[in-house]
Length: 323
Ligand code: UT7
Image (cartoon, rainbow, N blue to C red; front, side, top):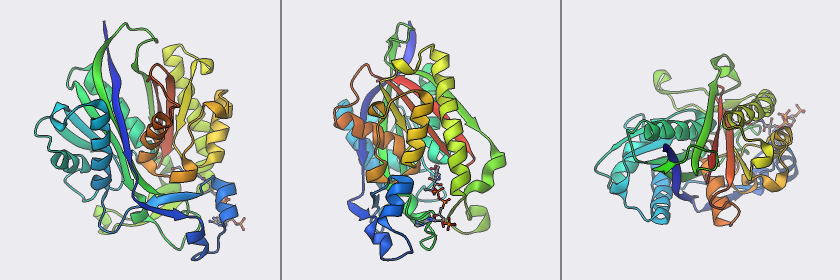
């Protein structure tokens, strides 16, 4: 018998306020045509005033618990992937724990920017395989609207807020690629690229800061590194592109999503795309896309999924799992 971390439930939450591209046309030298043609984004959600990352995360978590038929105290560990936690400390994860009423287990945040959810899944998998937890609630949640430079048209039109949550549960597998659950992970980072995507403030500089990005450079790395990490994770399983039912990419830019799919040899009819509706929600984008894919009836039990993401650091990685 092989222990597998199997998806038991999924849910998401998007703030009520939907902001179309026209909102930016009124404020900046930009156009709906430019935003759609260069990024694929048509709208995004922004959190209401006072609404925090842990609020969004808690809503998504409750939806996942409901789908799984579980209550808060059935969870052994809570991991929140975020770069926009409510406070410097405590972690967003302990805030979610408190809001859910989970009085057992442990909770902590993971910060790998847009790759955060992939890093969190890999860590949750490790906790389950090592027997430290039976059920792990893994959340990606962000309020990137709080770290935008509203005068920088090259970045502020691209990001949005939201949260997605997945519950992983230890189950016995046969040790083959037919097993449900996480089959392989691949994580990478290279700190020499810190200056192409970062926030120019933080605790040590006593400011919050705003996001800075050299878009073209990040684009170039994304296309190359996302296909590479997905190939590496698939190679660990012995499975190939033809076996993949759904690629669930980080939703940053439709052109990156298309190029990566092409490099992987997967047609766009096997890619979950939500970038048009959510924009780039950083660590929330993959669980949001998974949740939408499930609720639209696309992702079904037994499907082979490759999730891949890249973000500030640079940090990038992928997960192969059977739903
Ligand atoms: O989630 C983490 C990972 N992040 C990403 O993966 C993002 C990666 N990068 C991208 O998605 C793209 O590079 C962008 C969408 C950010 C930009 O697309 P691009 O095709 O690389 O455009 P660019 O930055 O080279 O800009 C082209 C032109 C520039 O004008 P000039 O210098 O050619 O006259 C920009 O000033 O487009 C201009 N521009 C805009 N024009 C209208 C930049 N932003 C805008 C805008 N509206 N919002």
